[in-house]
Image (cartoon, rainbow, N blue to C red):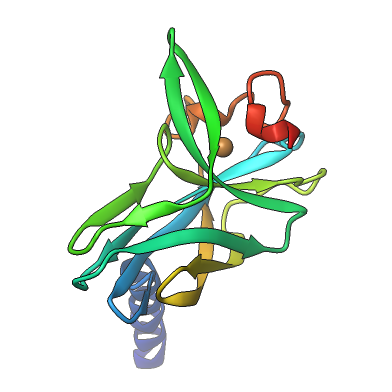
Length: 170
Ligand SMILES: [Cu+2]
């Protein structure tokens, strides 16, 4: 009985730790909660989100992301005439003393070429963030459930199809 209780507590602690401490640091950079939303079976791409805090005194730049997909890009989202469009960006500036959020409807990582292998809840996506100053930082994107209404990731509903995304053609 005692043993059962102990095991239960240990499992709780473990779960709590993995949620709270899902962050990665390198020098003065802290990457918090890299995540992606689960995707539909037919999805060709998925967004990756996180916050990056630079506690140093000099700016850094996220210049790329490497992961096991045909293509991984940095995107920003611009809304024009009520239509959200993905735009490829080459770098994401992380100013000194600031936190930059990569989030739905804004800057994000785009994992492209899923090819019938959708992101599933609980899946972990290893990736390497490439920073100009800090160099490579290994992180793990955790795949989380999408809201019942699809909230949180609306800008990717038609993404990867190509009609409205100039970045998808290059
Ligand atoms: Cu995108």
